[in-house]
Structures are given as C-alpha cells and as structure tokens.
Image (cartoon, rainbow over all chains, first blue to last red; front, side):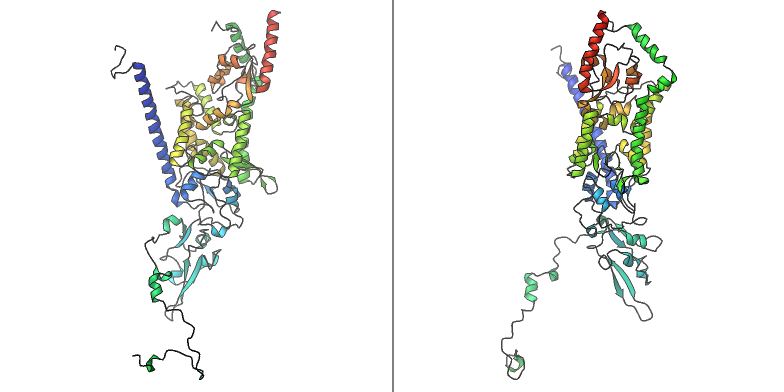
Length: 263
Length: 312
C-alpha cells in the first residue's frame, strides 16, 4: 500500500497517465487553434473570382496545391496568387475583372496547366465556364439613364446570349432606352463587360454566383410552364379532324348550334 | 570517454589545432558544399522566377520550369510535385489528377535515392534564413531559454495529417512559411516575409535550430523518406580522433552520435540533410560523401589498413 500515491495508483502509472493527459491537452489545443486558423483563412473564399473550370469553392480550396502554374500559363497574364495576409485564401489563384478580365482562350491553357484538377478538365468548352456572373447596378448604368451606351453588350464575347438588349420606347421626344440584360445560362463571368464599362466605378460587375443568385425553391409549381392535370383540363381539346366532310357548297362543316335549337 | 578505444585527448586537440591553422583558402574550400547549396537554392528560385517573369524557355514554346516548390513542370515534360502536399490533398478527399501523382512519384523517387532531407539543405529557401539565424546566434552567443525534443516534428507531422482530414484543407500547405516564401518571391510580395522574419527571430533568440530542427513537418516527412537514402556521409572510425568539430557545425548534431557511427560506418539517420558541413570541416577526413553500397567495402579496406599500420 505504501507505494500507492494519492490517487490510489502506483506513482509510475500515475505519472504516465498525467503525461498522456498533458500530451492530449497539448495536441488538442494546438490542433483546435490550427484548425481555426485554416477555416478563418478559407472563409474569404466566396469573394474570389477563380480561373475557368475551378471546382466549387470548398473542393477548390481542398484541391489547389498553390503552385501557380495556371498563373504562368495564362496568355494575358491576368491571374494572380493571393499572398499571405490578403483578403482571399492564401496562395490560391484569382483574377480581378476590372483590371484584367479573362479573355476566354478556346484551349483553356490555365486549366490544362493545373496538375491537381482543382481547375477541372471536365470543362471542355470555355463557353461552359462559370467563373462568376455579371450583375448590373441599374442606378448607375448609363443605359438605364437613357444614354446609348451598351458597351457591355457590344464587348461581350457571347453577345446576344450572355447579354441581350431590351428596348424600352419612351415618349416621342425621347430616345428609346436600350437596356442590357444578363442571362446566367450563358454568362461565363469572364469580366470583359466589367473592364469595358465606362462609368467611374463599373456599373456591371462580376460576382461569384453564390453572392448574387437566388433560388426559387422546390415547392413553387409554375403550372403554366409545364403540363399538369389542371392545365390539361383547361386546354383546348385537340382539334379533331373535321367530322363532316365539307358540304358540296364548299362551306366547312361545323357545329351550327344556333340553328339546331340547342339553346 | 577514456574507455573508448581510439580516443586520445592529445590526438583530438591536435585535430582541432589542425583545423584552426587552416589558411584562408583552405577555409573557403571547407565551405564548398555551403556555396554549392546556396547556388542550388538560389538557382532553383531563379529558374522559377525567370520562367514566370522573363519567359525563360528550354526550346521554342517550352517553358523551362513553371510553378513553384509545391508543384511544377520541368521543360514542359516532367511534372514535379511536393509529395507531402500531394499526400495532404489526397487526405482532404480530393482525387488527384494523374499529372500530380506522377510528379509526386518522381520527387519521392529522387529523395528515396539521395536522401529526403537533401530538399532541406539544397532546395528549401527557408534553410538560408535558418542558417543565417544559427550563424548569428553562435556569433553573439545567445543563451538557450528552453529545450524541445527534436522528435516534436514527427508529432507535428502527424497532427498535419489529422487536421487535414478534419478540416478538409491541406493543413500544412495553408500555413507553410516555405510555401509562402517561395510563392511570394515568384508571384508577388505579401505578408509571407513576416513569417520568414518570425522564423529568423525564433531561431536566433528563442530556440537554436528551432524551425528546421524541431518544428517543420516537411522536414520530418523527408526525414522518414530519407531512411532509404543511398547517398550518405561515410564515417571512418580509424582516422576519427573524436575532436567533435563536426558536431559543432552540424545543424542536426544528434545524427553524428559516435556510437552509432562506429556501428554503422556511416550517418544512418534520415534526419541528416546531406548538407555537407561536417565532411570538409573534418580535420582528419573521416567523413566523406559516398554511396551506401560502396561504404561497407571501403570501411573493410580501411579497417585492414589500420590493422596493418598498428601491427607494423
């Protein structure tokens, strides 16, 4: 009994357990701190405009090895690696559309340079890239003020698909408005419109989809856009082939209910 | 100490004297590997920098070396990937593309052959910072505040892998001062240099060989990889006078444990970075680079010669 310590354990065993606990505590606090730093660093992610083909943000952060090969292989040299202490996740590639938009190289050299697949080779055509979405500030857009600007529309590499013009006639003394509209199903987020926008601060900007796109929700049933039982009921019955052959007089056969005493 | 065969205090002092009486040129010559390492470290940086900024090409439209130490492509053909970074990305659950896997295999193969920590002494840019800190520390005689076990790095290595799995982010790559330094030299400045400054001050004032010798998980990874290295420092126990000058310049002096050296006949530990500081400094020429398969034969011959000399 004499060799037992206060806890009723042998001192050596007690020392061992305390050492283990100390080790675990050190590892736990250190690990938590480390994990916290990592998550803090990755949190700024949604604001970054990534090169074409980039995986969804979490997957991209996991996959990017921060080697900068995309940066070197980019022909217009628009890609940058975020240095330490910046607003974006450390070491990952991004571009700033206002100063240097993506020129949409058809062979996508940045994606081909990526060794890990963070820029996914699933992207076959540059038109399918979704780097971000152009968003128009209608309060500062010159076109919305009635000026004939439409530079964004003219510069858009997918003009007519990603950006279309909608005309709004006004009273006779004023020119019709030519309003640019962005279509998310075609806009690649290359940023050429943002670069070209003549306002002091761009009135059309590329933002990550996550920051601008809403979601309607599964429970909305837009009944008029597809066939349901109800729309079926209101639909005109398919025109049956004229049942009666045209009368010899050449008049089409039909339902002459006014004269048939049906009413 | 006196029990050890071959140890004679007068011989050891004579060896030290021999070293101290080296002239200027001989001294420079004994730093030759240091110069070569700096050339290698700066050269690697320069190749990356030149390709990124000055468009250096091996042939027409074939960039020389693009990327950085995390992943790169040499002459547009040979992918190179940091195997530790690739391991972390693998552990996040991302399926790596073939190119980075081949690159990791290439680099791993090289270091399995020549010793993993060759990276630390010959390629890593942080090594220049920690070497400078270590040199200055000796110069001004900083007293140690505390000690940490050098095995700590293996725990940090394990923690890196665990935290990578938990956070889904390559844990070391996101905080690595090596990556920061290298990226920012090649791709533009940021706060990464403050990390280098922190390492410098830590090594200088707080813990001797603190970063490279105690904390860096990449060094720990390469120490494990280095176990199979074929390029090693051979040890000749017959000429060694136990003067201890090698351990003074060695950044990982535990690898120069005399008992183990005599047992094995070469520096066995994977923690040796083949930095080549000990070999030319040795006044007796007892430490030399050699290939492992040749070492045993050489040592047997050296033993025979020594026996001959003693019996004569």
